[in-house]
Amino acid sequence: MTTEKLTHFNTEGRARMVDVSNKPDTHRTAIASGIVFMKSETLARIEEGQIAKGDVLAVAQVAGVMGAKKTPDLIPMCHPLLITSVDIKFEIFQSENNKPASIKVIATAKTSGQTGVEMEAVTAVSITALTIYDMCKAIDKGISFGQIGLIEKSGGKSGLYQRLEPLP
Image (cartoon, rainbow, N blue to C red; front, side, top):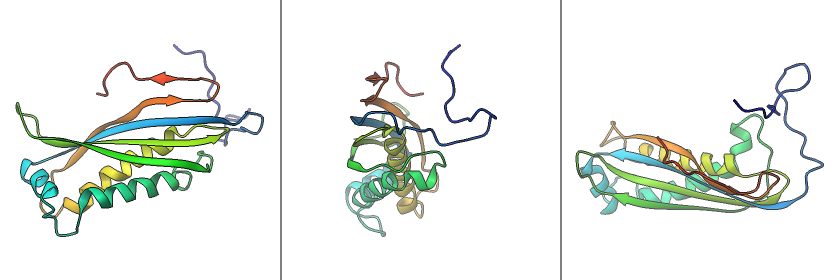
């Protein structure tokens, strides 16, 4: 059991935004990923540019960046940050060995500040996945996503974190 205290509660046990005013600015990076599962036919149409709403991956990239920038509007206790960079990348996996076709989304967020960008990276992945679903749902309502989580973060008091085990 962890002995670390939860910092999002005040002395009365009520939710609060953590005070980071005494923390030094450091360069911070967070990398998150997630996977969007779909039919092989859907992935083929994405790759061929045959989705009626347009270039799925280009639109999803922009949505992911926008999602990262809007994180404090979505997550109540997130600090508004001056994000210095958000990058969304994709890895394409064809269907094989009874596994569905999929697109892995990898988001990297960066800032220099008093608190980290983990939530921004995870939000970027989530919004990117939701956008892929939105753009393709007319032809594949069974699209799903999962294995969303933090892969790595650096900077700040806790330093480097790297996920050692794969996401479930």
